[in-house]
Length: 432
Ligand code: CTP
Image (cartoon, rainbow, N blue to C red; front, side, top):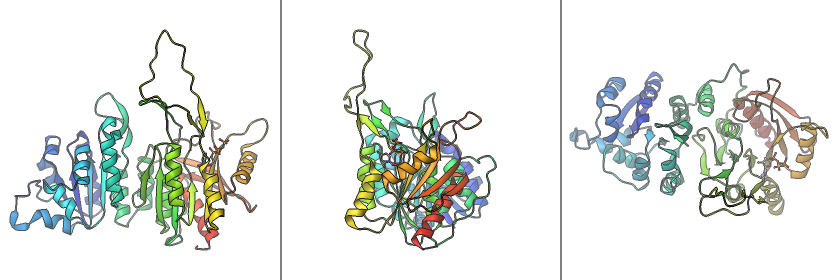
């Protein structure tokens, strides 16, 4: 396949050399188009040597070959990594002032952006608006990874690992190697996991699946929020399993520590109320709804316009909370009101206590919520004393059914668990 690798002007440009290697070793022909600024980080000679092809960013080079039209036309896939805030803005604005932006305008195949920038730039309203514009046009924009940035700062803005970008790119080309899909969500190989029984290809062909994932964040003031430990890994694994089964996936996600799944229609939200609006809208046309998001049950009743200051002369602040709506309950109610055929899957993160074990709490939650299936995760410290589920690469669940069918057990990598959920959904829909 012909892949164009656009390289933006960020320090992470050096990581794209490894990405280029992954593409060429997988047998793809790669044309690298570095922006002018990026050549201050990695020079043209490196790209020429690694790709074995001439490299330029000047539309007036080799004019006889009409590069600004031809390269985009011939590309089966365009990957931009790192995508800087400036590049995202220029792409969203339809600029055509260098070889990379003209190529993006000529693209007829899938386009994948892997952003990398400082957290403030990523979270800036302009960048978020540009990302939303691109995504609304069907462009795939990965969420940046969370971690150490160029300076001493840490936060969202890190370029996803080359293996994760590679996996996302391969999924767009329709050849997702199963092991590549697993690395896409974890960015690293988990310790030895039992083999993941593959999902049956086509078992969800044409089925519209809505998946919510990640953890909502409820603002307290312009810099603080109430959040939770959800990494989004299980939701991403579910999306990838559903995509591999042929589903048409809408992925509504709050904060995650991993890249969003390539190939799904993505919608990024922040708070429980935003998640509610996006979920209820998308659920109206979904055959299956999977509520894997960790939704904050409460939000601060007042969001301070200015940063809450610590002053010696005032008492410590008290945060008043109000209840957020229960989205899963509403999805179930809307299905009943619309008399819609829809399979609804909830998740329950439970701990046991002296009044009952995690399973009995989950059984009660299943009855209360009225969804068809409930995936029970036992959370909290395991035998070794470390956290069992949140942020981990593996999971152990029981899938409970409202109709009283025997629970299905699944354990292993989060993808293995996702495959089990997808297989059960296909069985319930009769599409296996
Ligand atoms: N959920 C939701 N809206 C909420 C809270 C939870 O849609 N406001 C969904 C979650 O996405 C999940 C399921 O409900 O699919 C169960 O979430 P969980 O946090 O385990 O349960 P809660 O309803 O919050 O109950 P509790 O915290 O009392 O155990």
